Image (spheres, rainbow, N blue to C red):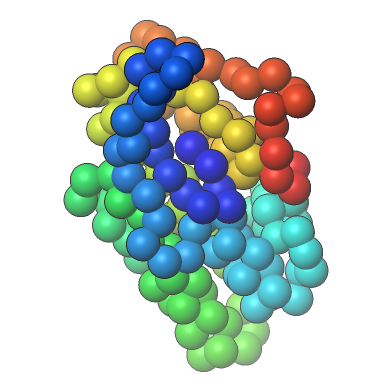
Length: 161
């Protein structure tokens, strides 16, 4: 799983892969950056949002885009929902917005990972997936099946983590 262009792929062997799902619009990493900008947190958005989310409570019910459909990803509606919430709730608690946003992202990613793991083998990731809560979510989803998450060497990891 990659965040810059969210995609989920099954690596059949070292020379071939099967693309399971990809981004229809905003990737999860792009969504993180845009939400961080909305919240005034700066760039890159991932680390900033994760820091805020760590001390927040996920009490805001943001949408879980495409959570029940296949392997495709679409995070533009989630990004818009966060922006609307911030505009209409001027006294929002930034940590709670961040925690609620992160939970929505991880719920979607986790559902798709669990679906993929149920049908395929191990997972590997780079970029956004390699840091913090996304990495833990991948490991948790894989461990539920008993496979574990296949880490990539540090040189293969890219992104802003």
